[in-house]
Every structure is written in C-alpha cells, then in structure tokens.
Image (cartoon, rainbow, N blue to C red):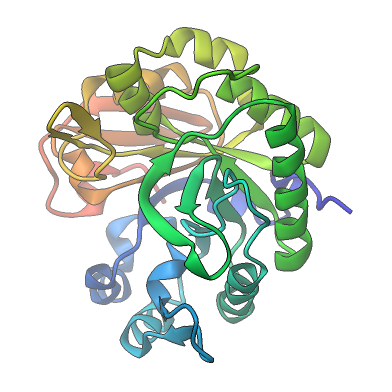
Length: 303
C-alpha cells in the first residue's frame, strides 16, 4: 500500500527552508553554531557504512561517521540514497534496502530520496556501483520495473519516498517517454514526492542538449518537495555533476522560475561562491553574493 504523499507529512512545514548536504567536516560546526541558519541536513546514508560483497558481514558501520552524525541530532534530517539503483534491469537489492531501513530506524529521517537512474551494473554477487548515473530505458517494461522497485522500497522503509531526476551522460535510444513524463506517471501510479535537482538538469542540457523549458513545462512541479542546487566541473568532453565549485547561472535562473514554491532547498556549500539563496515567506529568491563566511550571512531572513 502506498504511503501518503510527502506533501501531507505532518512535519513538512516545520522544516520548510534551507538545507545543506552533510559531511563529517560539518558536524562540529553544526553543533557549535546553531545560529548559522541551517533548517535541515541531507545525509547520504551509504556514507555511514562500508560494503563488502560476498562476505558474511556485508555491511559494516563506520563508527566515526555514525558518531559524528549522532552529534548533530538536533537537526531534522532527510536521507538521500545512491544505492538502490532503481533503473537497473535486475531485481532490487533487498539487502541494501534492509540496511537503509536499519539506518532509518536509528536516525528517523523525514523522508528518503533516490535517483531515477541506473547506479549499479552487473547482477547478483557481481554487481558493482557505476560511480555515475547511467540512463534508464524509459519504455513500458522499465516503467513496470520502476513501479515494483519503488513500491518495495516504500513498504520496507515505511517513510515517504522522493524520486530525483538524474544527471546522465549519454542518450538512451528507443525511449517512449521523457524523464519528466515518467516521473509524472510514476507519481500518479504510486504516490511519491519529487526531488528536483536543478544542477542535474543543467548537466543534461550542456552534455545532451536538453530543452529545460520544455522539461519544466512537462513536469507537474506542484509535486516537487525538495530542490537541489549545486555546481560541477568540466571533465574532458563532459560537464560533470561533481557537486563542487560555484553553481552555474542556469541553476539560479531555474530556481528563480520556481521561486513561489514552499519547499526544502538543499545546496552544496561550495555552490554559494557567486550566489546565495534567500527565503521570504513562501518564496525562494536568488541574488548575487560573495561566498559568505557563515550561513547566517547568506540567509539573514531564515529563522
């Protein structure tokens, strides 16, 4: 049975505002400086353990990572996964989903998000993480597979689920639908929320020539719950979603287009070098700004 759409989550308004992706280097700062204006912390749960396939103890918690995240318990958190690989052709990795459930039981995130892409290649004991998002075939068999995998994930984790648009670096031939169309269809079929990563859209525009106006026109943006902004790097012939450096101007233009949304906005700390985000009431606005020394300088109106 599908969980309630995350927009109806009773804690959603409590955390509407600005967030940051978590890494261990931020733990001490977040604890010592609550006035910095961070409303929520986005955690990649796979950074909390080592994975050793084909061994009796496949998952081993990284004690220091767990300890540091425990220290930041005053902040509401959300989980942002990079492991279930919704777009892979094989069945969902139930052991990995079970490990996510263990982390969820410990930290009680408000929701869990995952990419609409292939991140694992191979099958069974030979599967390995690709390291980047690979495109999925947006056809009827793949759509049926998505529905089954997301349903299993929702039932096992027992918290609201968000699905994210992905950065991909090659065209997938033979697709019947666009990514925006697939997200809309899955949303109606299952009942999850949408995580809209604006930098991923820019990556696909630069590398693959995507029409972002057409993409946003096609997507039902009313279902967007969380927005990501970040920066990237040129790596050979490709512009990569490296989540580093200043966010390109196109990201901020897209954010301005969505400025009337009441949503969580997560950003990578380095992406604010040339811009900062301001929230006032229900709106999100962008402005040019030198990289602030503290969150409170970037977001003086976030309380």
